[in-house]
Length: 192
Image (spheres, one colour):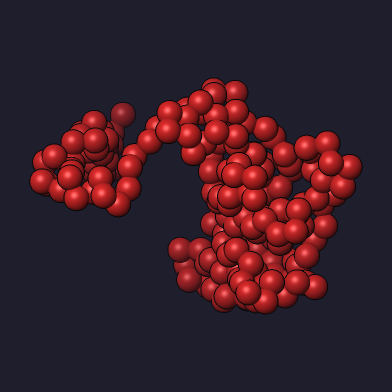
Protein backbone atom coordinates (compact mmCIF):
# COMPACT_ATOMS: atom_id res chain seq x y z
CA UNK A 1 0.00 0.00 0.00
CA UNK A 2 1.30 3.43 -0.91
CA UNK A 3 0.61 6.36 1.46
CA UNK A 4 0.97 9.95 0.32
CA UNK A 5 3.59 12.03 2.16
CA UNK A 6 1.07 14.66 3.40
CA UNK A 7 -0.98 11.86 5.03
CA UNK A 8 2.10 10.48 6.78
CA UNK A 9 3.03 13.95 8.05
CA UNK A 10 -0.51 14.50 9.27
CA UNK A 11 -0.47 11.16 11.09
CA UNK A 12 2.86 12.00 12.75
CA UNK A 13 1.54 15.41 13.80
CA UNK A 14 -1.62 13.85 15.27
CA UNK A 15 0.38 11.25 17.20
CA UNK A 16 2.67 13.99 18.53
CA UNK A 17 -0.29 16.13 19.64
CA UNK A 18 -1.91 13.10 21.29
CA UNK A 19 1.27 12.42 23.25
CA UNK A 20 1.53 16.07 24.32
CA UNK A 21 -2.13 16.17 25.33
CA UNK A 22 -1.74 12.96 27.35
CA UNK A 23 1.29 14.37 29.17
CA UNK A 24 -0.62 17.57 29.92
CA UNK A 25 -3.51 15.58 31.39
CA UNK A 26 -1.15 13.63 33.64
CA UNK A 27 0.47 16.85 34.84
CA UNK A 28 -2.82 18.75 35.19
CA UNK A 29 -2.93 18.59 38.98
CA UNK A 30 0.72 19.68 39.25
CA UNK A 31 0.42 22.88 37.18
CA UNK A 32 -0.15 25.09 40.24
CA UNK A 33 3.00 23.72 41.83
CA UNK A 34 4.94 23.97 38.58
CA UNK A 35 3.93 27.60 38.01
CA UNK A 36 4.14 28.58 41.67
CA UNK A 37 0.47 29.57 41.74
CA UNK A 38 -0.99 26.75 43.88
CA UNK A 39 -1.41 28.83 47.07
CA UNK A 40 -3.03 31.73 45.21
CA UNK A 41 -5.36 29.39 43.30
CA UNK A 42 -6.66 27.83 46.52
CA UNK A 43 -8.05 31.23 47.56
CA UNK A 44 -10.37 31.32 44.56
CA UNK A 45 -11.42 27.82 43.63
CA UNK A 46 -10.96 24.22 44.58
CA UNK A 47 -10.90 21.29 42.18
CA UNK A 48 -13.18 18.52 43.41
CA UNK A 49 -13.75 15.22 41.65
CA UNK A 50 -17.44 14.39 41.47
CA UNK A 51 -17.95 10.69 40.74
CA UNK A 52 -20.25 9.75 37.87
CA UNK A 53 -21.50 6.16 37.64
CA UNK A 54 -20.70 4.26 34.46
CA UNK A 55 -24.41 3.79 33.73
CA UNK A 56 -25.00 7.57 33.64
CA UNK A 57 -23.92 8.91 30.20
CA UNK A 58 -23.25 12.41 31.50
CA UNK A 59 -21.78 14.31 28.58
CA UNK A 60 -22.69 17.66 30.12
CA UNK A 61 -23.63 20.62 27.96
CA UNK A 62 -25.38 22.91 30.47
CA UNK A 63 -26.04 23.38 34.18
CA UNK A 64 -28.33 25.14 36.61
CA UNK A 65 -28.75 24.99 40.36
CA UNK A 66 -32.26 24.23 41.56
CA UNK A 67 -33.78 26.08 44.55
CA UNK A 68 -33.37 22.96 46.74
CA UNK A 69 -29.60 22.88 46.05
CA UNK A 70 -29.58 20.05 43.52
CA UNK A 71 -27.62 20.43 40.32
CA UNK A 72 -29.54 20.16 37.04
CA UNK A 73 -27.43 18.94 34.12
CA UNK A 74 -28.44 19.04 30.45
CA UNK A 75 -26.52 16.60 28.27
CA UNK A 76 -25.45 16.37 24.68
CA UNK A 77 -27.50 13.17 24.41
CA UNK A 78 -30.64 15.19 25.23
CA UNK A 79 -31.20 14.14 28.84
CA UNK A 80 -31.73 16.25 31.96
CA UNK A 81 -30.37 14.82 35.21
CA UNK A 82 -30.94 16.12 38.73
CA UNK A 83 -27.89 15.49 40.91
CA UNK A 84 -28.15 15.33 44.71
CA UNK A 85 -24.96 15.83 46.73
CA UNK A 86 -22.76 17.31 43.99
CA UNK A 87 -21.68 20.21 46.21
CA UNK A 88 -20.77 18.21 49.32
CA UNK A 89 -17.24 18.48 50.74
CA UNK A 90 -16.59 14.86 49.74
CA UNK A 91 -19.24 14.29 47.05
CA UNK A 92 -20.99 10.95 46.66
CA UNK A 93 -23.87 12.18 44.49
CA UNK A 94 -26.95 10.40 43.28
CA UNK A 95 -28.24 10.95 39.75
CA UNK A 96 -31.91 11.07 38.79
CA UNK A 97 -33.01 11.13 35.15
CA UNK A 98 -35.65 13.86 34.98
CA UNK A 99 -36.17 14.20 31.21
CA UNK A 100 -34.97 12.65 27.96
CA UNK A 101 -35.54 12.77 24.22
CA UNK A 102 -34.13 16.22 23.54
CA UNK A 103 -31.16 17.07 21.31
CA UNK A 104 -27.84 18.61 22.46
CA UNK A 105 -28.98 20.68 25.45
CA UNK A 106 -26.60 23.67 25.56
CA UNK A 107 -28.74 25.89 27.73
CA UNK A 108 -30.60 25.02 30.92
CA UNK A 109 -32.62 27.37 33.10
CA UNK A 110 -34.97 26.78 36.02
CA UNK A 111 -37.95 29.07 36.57
CA UNK A 112 -41.17 28.69 38.56
CA UNK A 113 -40.91 24.91 38.86
CA UNK A 114 -40.08 24.25 35.21
CA UNK A 115 -36.88 23.56 33.29
CA UNK A 116 -36.17 25.45 30.07
CA UNK A 117 -33.84 23.58 27.73
CA UNK A 118 -32.18 25.25 24.76
CA UNK A 119 -31.43 22.58 22.19
CA UNK A 120 -30.58 22.40 18.48
CA UNK A 121 -33.94 23.40 17.07
CA UNK A 122 -35.88 24.98 19.92
CA UNK A 123 -36.27 26.21 23.46
CA UNK A 124 -38.39 23.67 25.32
CA UNK A 125 -40.29 24.18 28.57
CA UNK A 126 -40.11 20.89 30.48
CA UNK A 127 -42.59 20.28 33.31
CA UNK A 128 -43.42 17.64 35.90
CA UNK A 129 -47.16 18.23 36.16
CA UNK A 130 -47.95 15.22 38.37
CA UNK A 131 -44.96 15.90 40.70
CA UNK A 132 -43.54 12.37 40.51
CA UNK A 133 -39.99 13.55 39.75
CA UNK A 134 -40.12 12.74 36.02
CA UNK A 135 -40.93 15.17 33.22
CA UNK A 136 -44.29 14.54 31.61
CA UNK A 137 -44.87 17.68 29.56
CA UNK A 138 -42.63 19.09 26.83
CA UNK A 139 -43.78 22.40 25.36
CA UNK A 140 -41.99 24.17 22.52
CA UNK A 141 -41.49 27.77 23.61
CA UNK A 142 -39.82 28.82 20.37
CA UNK A 143 -38.52 27.09 17.26
CA UNK A 144 -38.34 29.97 14.79
CA UNK A 145 -34.88 29.04 13.56
CA UNK A 146 -33.68 26.11 11.51
CA UNK A 147 -30.59 24.02 11.28
CA UNK A 148 -29.18 21.85 8.57
CA UNK A 149 -25.84 20.69 9.88
CA UNK A 150 -24.80 18.95 13.07
CA UNK A 151 -22.35 21.72 14.04
CA UNK A 152 -25.04 24.42 14.09
CA UNK A 153 -25.48 24.45 17.85
CA UNK A 154 -27.84 26.65 19.87
CA UNK A 155 -26.64 28.06 23.22
CA UNK A 156 -29.18 29.41 25.71
CA UNK A 157 -28.87 31.68 28.73
CA UNK A 158 -30.55 31.76 32.12
CA UNK A 159 -33.64 33.99 32.34
CA UNK A 160 -32.87 37.69 32.37
CA UNK A 161 -34.74 40.03 34.79
CA UNK A 162 -37.65 40.30 32.32
CA UNK A 163 -37.92 36.50 31.96
CA UNK A 164 -36.32 36.31 28.51
CA UNK A 165 -33.89 33.63 27.39
CA UNK A 166 -31.13 34.70 25.01
CA UNK A 167 -30.13 32.13 22.39
CA UNK A 168 -26.97 32.30 20.30
CA UNK A 169 -27.13 30.27 17.09
CA UNK A 170 -23.80 28.95 15.88
CA UNK A 171 -22.61 28.58 12.32
CA UNK A 172 -20.68 25.75 10.75
CA UNK A 173 -17.00 26.07 9.92
CA UNK A 174 -18.03 27.54 6.57
CA UNK A 175 -19.42 30.69 8.26
CA UNK A 176 -22.67 30.55 6.35
CA UNK A 177 -25.98 28.75 6.52
CA UNK A 178 -29.10 28.56 4.42
CA UNK A 179 -31.16 28.53 7.62
CA UNK A 180 -32.70 31.60 9.22
CA UNK A 181 -30.88 33.47 11.97
CA UNK A 182 -27.70 31.34 12.07
CA UNK A 183 -24.91 33.46 13.54
CA UNK A 184 -27.45 35.66 15.36
CA UNK A 185 -28.42 36.13 19.00
CA UNK A 186 -32.17 35.88 19.60
CA UNK A 187 -34.26 37.09 22.53
CA UNK A 188 -36.94 34.53 23.39
CA UNK A 189 -39.64 36.26 25.42
CA UNK A 190 -41.64 34.47 28.16
CA UNK A 191 -44.52 33.93 25.72
CA UNK A 192 -42.20 32.55 23.05
